[in-house]
Length: 485
Image (cartoon, rainbow, N blue to C red; front, top):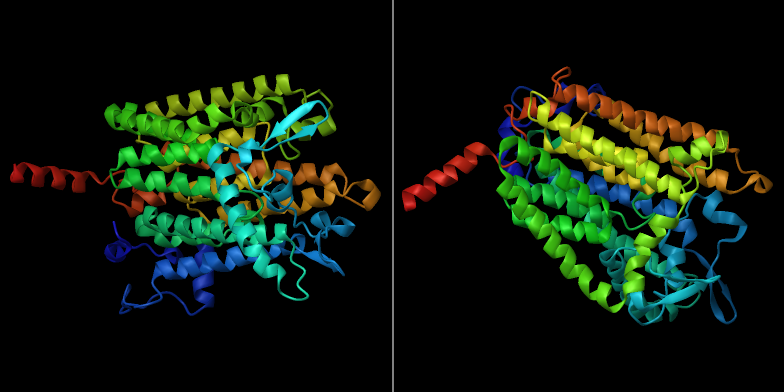
C-alpha cells in the first residue's frame, strides 16, 4: 500500500515505545488533537527517513575516510598511506580499499580471469559472481575518472581511494532503496524504519564490505511478495544469492508459510525463478572460469573460524582445536541444519501463523550464531529483519550499539600486544554480549509467535502480516476478474 494511503491508520511510536516517546517530548511533544497528519508537502515520512539514512551513511563514510588517504612525492601521489597501523588505530579498515589492487581491479580485464600465487596455491576472486561484477563495474568507473583527479595539483587521493568513493556512492544508492522499501513494508508502523535508517551499524559497517546489495535484494524480494509478485521475488532472491549466499535462506521462511497455508504453487514459482536467475548469472563464469567460480566455495570450505565467532571465543579460552576446518564445517553445518529444522517444525505447529519477518529473522540469526564466519559487517543483514520482526526500539538500539562496538574493539585487539593492543578477553566479552542480545531477541520473537508477548506489528495491521499479500485486496481483484469475464 502506498505510504500516503496509510496515514489514517499510522501508529505513532511515541505511543508505544518509551525511547521514541522521550525523544518526541524533547523536540516538542506528540501530535495534538487537531494536528493534520500527512499534510506536509515536502517533509513526508519517507523524505525524513531518507535524509536520516544519508546522515548515517555520511557517518559511515567518515569512519572509513582515514583509510583512503595517500601521500605525495615529487613524482606524484604515492599509494595508500596506512602508516602507524592507522587501519586499526582509526578502526577505518575496510575490504574495499586493499582489494582494489589485491584482486586485479586496478587493471583492465574481467575479475574472474585474474589470479595470483600464495605459496603453492593459485588464488582467484573469492566473491560470488554478482559481487565480483559489482566490484568490477565500480573499478571501471574509477579507472575512467582517476586521470581527471590526477590532473589536479597537490591532491593526495590514490586511485584506491577514489575506488572507495565510487563504491560508497553505489552502496549508498542501494541503501536508500532499502529505506524506501522498508518504509513500505512497515506499513502502519512506518516510523519503525528510523531504526534501519539511523542504525549505528550503518555508521560503522555500511562500507566495510559489499553487503548492502544483498540486503537490498532480500528486502526487495519481501516487497515483491507483499505485492503478490512471487516470480519477481524469486528472481530477486536468486540475484541476491549471486551477491552473497544468505538471501537463499529467505526461501525457508516462505516454504514454511506455503506448507502451512497450502499455497505451495506460489512458493514453487518463487523457487523456480530463484534457481533460473541464479543459473543465468552464474553459468557464464562457471563455464569460462571454473576455478575462479569455485574459489568462493573452496575458501569457505577450507578456512578456519573468524575472529568474532563463538568458536574462536571458545578456542581462545579453552583450546579445543576448533579452528580445524573439517571439524568446524561439520559442527557449524549440523547446528545450523538442526536450527532450521527446529524453526520449520515450530513454524508449522505454533498456533498463530508466524509472520514472514519472524521466520526470516530466526533463520538468519541461527546462521550467524552457528556459522564459522561472522565478519562483523554481517550484522547489517539482521537490521531490517529485526526491525520488521521485533520493533522494540530500546532493545534494538541497545543491541545495535553493542554490535557496532565489536568493530573498534576487534581493531584494537588486532594491533597486537607489541603495539599496545588489548588482550582477547575484552574482545571475547563484547562478542558474548552481542551474541547474548541476539539470543534474547530470538527468545522474544519465539514468545511473540507463541502469543506470550504482544505483537505490535499484528496489532497495527488488524491481525494481518503486512509482508504478505492483503487477502481482502486479493479477494477484490478476483471479484473484479470474475465481473470482467
